[in-house]
Length: 450
Image (cartoon, rainbow, N blue to C red; front, side, top):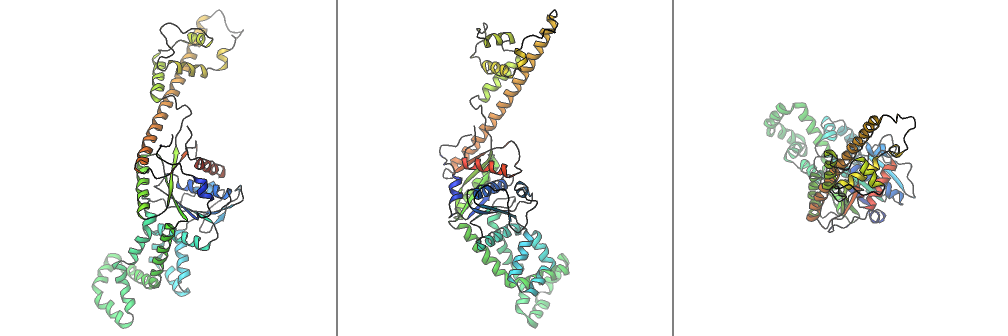
């Protein structure tokens, strides 16, 4: 696949080498290779002299395995085997532990213990919608505030929508500011007898109804949690706003990661538009798993026609083919320019084993020409079938390439301002640093091989 003329190539190495680049956020829909891209960027940045840390939110733990680490947790761990002057650290977000750290850092010991032991808090910190995305941003803010690394690479959460990462602070803020939370906080805010009177009289009907629906103990757990967290709610919103502004700062670069598929590029286009609307710096698009071919000059139509000629038997017989190979003229009625004939003949000749051209075995029964002819016929049939199968596979590959190019051109037509790096598909999964290094090389090259 080749880049559309309107698209500028994405220069990865200048982005990684620029000391002003402090945060790179890899975002996109699920299953497009964000984790692998983030890890490959981290390896390449470290080997080019940066002190980098990769924060992944991927629960599949592929990042740890590819970096030779048994497991990752909420604490950055240095990756061994990096070749170069820099350093690479990696970590995987522990959502609940990050939430616990916030509580412990912003509440006194007694209140922190009350919050951490609260059943509603335990449920909220472990699986409330949007908590993972918010905690990813919280952890990003913590890493940046420590100023221990000069480059932070973030692999965004594997969620249904690529926009969840940006929406998380707003959603959590809406939850904390919601009418239900404010209503539960009201008695504690009033305090003393007035508060108890308000709770017993003004809220008796509501709490009775909620108690029946949710359970009285659950409602008391929620009220206890809200009361304990009251002084921290403002801090949540403040830090979320600060991290959001950090994502808009010049030192941040977003990389939208996609596959050359219609749905993935449609969501990538939506994300590009959203980043522009939020005034967040977009570095470009990483197009993963792009297919190529070393025989792109042979079109799908010609390959299919050649395969059909072989399957229908409309090809010169083996003796004629060998005669042509030795320099003889093609038989009457066969033209080297006939669709598929030349390619099929050459493919069949290339597929023949050396034994096909060897001298006859002296021990072979020379007085049995029928046996020799039958063996030769079986050999010709096998070569033809193999060649036809390879031609069909090539035709299918060229169709895939054409479809990927059309899909990519549609994206480029809509967003010609977005720089693009194409990453050629590897034959297998990435399992080690060498594989990540190979991905980094392809990222830096920016164009899929043909």
